[in-house]
Length: 165
Image 1: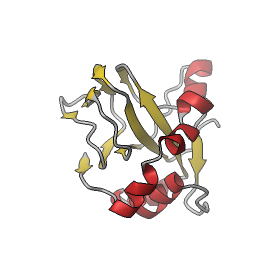
Image 2: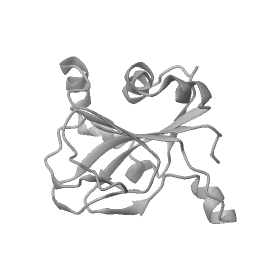
Image 3: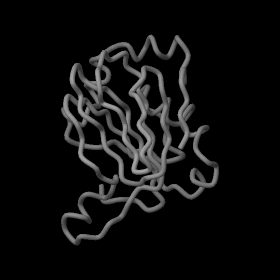
Image 4: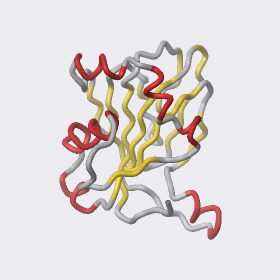
């Protein structure tokens, strides 16, 4: 696992300070995930951050083997149960567990929140601190109870096989 504080510069953070930008790509609003490949031309600031900044923090071998990245914005007001990120369609239809290989969470919006820590199955608890990037293997993880505010995060998954789109 890697945790990087002060991940992006002030200029980029200023662009991300618009809550409507985050809402536009929110899973809560769109009910869909967004996808980019390695050779994909960035269409928005989130894709630029993924390709220009986050790719550099991921092991080169994972980037080389990955066929795509899945990303979405999460707005959470409550906890999130233990889970692994997986191809939900294959899981529901055939009970086959097809997981992403690497997960990333980035807290790039200055949310005011109490609780909402990322919990990893090895006992680690990571606070959702503003401008913090967290990179971890796709093992069971959860979000603990949010007692105040809304947790806003960019989530990115790297895949070796293309999931059901």
